[in-house]
Structures are given as C-alpha cells and as structure tokens.
Image 1 (cartoon, rainbow, N blue to C red):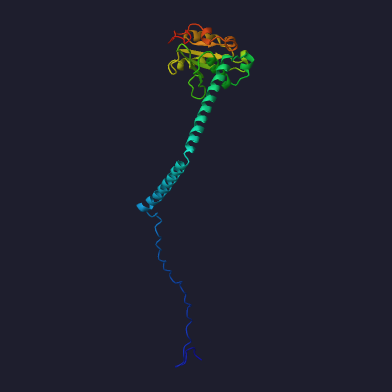
Image 2: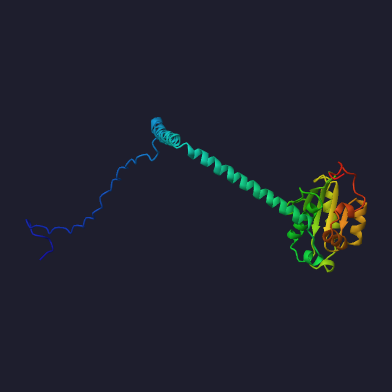
Length: 255
C-alpha cells in the first residue's frame, strides 16, 4: 500500500500549540485627593471671645473683692500694719548686719598660718576685708575670669582708687617667687584699664629681684610676706605702710 491517503478520508488534526495567557493589564488606581492639612484660619471673634470672657471674670472678681473690703474696712488697715512691720523688721536686720560687719572689720586680724591655709579666692576676700577695715567700705573683690589683672578694688578715705592683684602661695616663702610676668599684666591694666591711682601686688610669698626693680621703675607697689604680716596682724592702714603714694584726691573724713 502507498502512503497516500484515500480519497474522502479525513486528515488528522494538526497539533495545536498551547496558547499562552497574558496577565491582564492593571490600570492604575485613581489618586485620592487628600484634604489640605493647613490649619484653618480663626476668625477674629474666635480670638476675641475668650479674652472678653477672661476680662469679665477678672472684673467680677475685682468688684467682689472691693465689695468685701468695703464691708470689712479693718482688713486693709491690718494688712498695712503687717507690711509696715515687715519692712521695719527687714531694715532692722540690715542695720544689725552692717553694725556686726563694722565691729568685725575693726577687730579683723590675720596671722600668717591662717593666710597660708586659705584658698586663693579666700585670700582675695581677706585682702578685701582688710581694706574695709582700714576705712574703705566700698572695697570689692573682682577676681575671676576676665578680671584684667585686678582682684580687689577699693577707694581709700583720700579718694584714691586702689587696684590690687593677689598672688597666694600655699607654701609661703617656699613657694614660687612672683616674677615680672605677673607685674607686666598688672602694669598693663592697672592704670590704662582700671584707672587706678595706687596699683599693688600682694602675696604671702616673695618677689624676684627683677620684679622688685621693675615695680620701682613702673611705680608699682609690692606687699611681700613680711609687709603682709605687719598689715594683717595690726591695725595700721596699708597706705601708711607704703611709701611714694600719689597725692590725695580729697581730704580725709577724719581730718
């Protein structure tokens, strides 16, 4: 038999290729419009109404207080008496504190072991208190950061402004001697910056020979350990222990 198909016979169906199904296209969802987050502007009356209500409450309280005080007239009198008593008590305490300070300053004495045991800030306060004892009630301690070389400032009874730098040595004479660098700072600020009439460096230690020569040339005054002992333990003002001071600006109150 030949391989030809008989006439009228059906041909076998050809193998069909499987159809590939494509995923449906996703249409983007429409964007939702978000409401604006900007705060709504308040109308004028929304701001005024709370203020009016608060003012009305305050006014009503004031009227009620005035009516109550009018019905009790003795209350303001008692309050005034209490206030006057408080002011008088405060003034009395201030006067007593000032009197105790004057008594303490008049009898203020230091010995060298006390001075050596002080902190450097306490040493500055001790120099301030000694100036107050001598008759400078306005003496103040100004030492600290940015003091420009001045630790104590005081005006003596003769009107002269004292600018004092303090150098404390815990070891006393055994500590490092104060040299010219410290005097350079004091000389550069004592008169040009602080406008001092008397510029002094006080230490419980000692000075180098160059520092003594420099101070003499620049009209600076030095208070070493020995002179400090005389000043602190006695009752003689510092201006009577130092020489070559400027002339007084005004007569002494005691003269």
